[in-house]
Image (tube, rainbow, N blue to C red; front, side, top):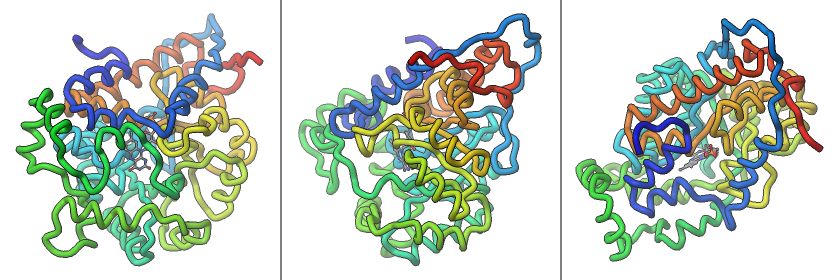
Length: 382
Ligand code: FNR
């Protein structure tokens, strides 16, 4: 394939470079993987209704989120262990976000330390945190985010349990990891990935968790420790309220689908909600975030900034979501495929493609200002 022209193209390019076990870890969903299809279908169940003979020589897709201007209503969803797919992927994604001036949500399961990511892109890095079963560690992670001057804290709440991802189980992507002949044979068909992986010293470190492990702990030992601390099924609204009390900046809750949960998030003092089903990687039989967005918008109104992820692949998806109430959209797999396939250039290209597509859609539908989009630009067949 020549140069990628849309986000789907990065998937095919990543599949060429990554061993199956790694590609499937990104690509897969839970159970029967029907939720992933539902996430995509939700966007095509709405159509954009263009208005013509409007002067659209000037277009503006800048958005303000939590007091900061971004150049585009998009951002990079948090994805853990990105360094497994491309050495230094987190730093590349942070640099791409800085260049495009969009948010990069650094996963707490990243291979780059929060402090380093914030140094690379101080205005663009948000920190995504999984609450652990250890309140001292939770407190320390929030403290570190604060000391690193991270602008926005995101707490992901849709992982009360590790989900059933059958591709990972069949491929042997489970902990403790055991190298089998089948995995080795598969990896040998992707030599460029193997060489880079070995050069980097094998399994990358979950750097944010290193300080909580015993001195000199290996990447495997740190990952095992992380596995004992998360998921934390005892996490409740009280836990979030305690973090709210500690964190003085904007707080965003990621992974809500129910309007009542959204209302609850507002009442504990969250400023933002990412309506998300985790890319259908947690619960398979779950509505798409786009389907739930209108009810959530009706419940919270303008009291909170709504964002959305799961299945966003086109500029027109971002426009549809805005018409239904989401100020911006983020995406996880596409940027991960892009960086896995083409490194820094891939991450840059993925964001540039989305910017261009949004611009083209705004022009085509006769609404030059992204912020002026509303349901009048949508046709939703019953
Ligand atoms: C994720 N996601 C995720 N979410 C989160 O809050 N913290 C994390 O560490 C991760 N890790 C992660 C790894 C990988 C490989 C993937 C693909 C996803 C979920 C992610 O943030 C986002 O919600 C989904 O990826 C959105 O769906 P799409 O855009 O991938 O369809």
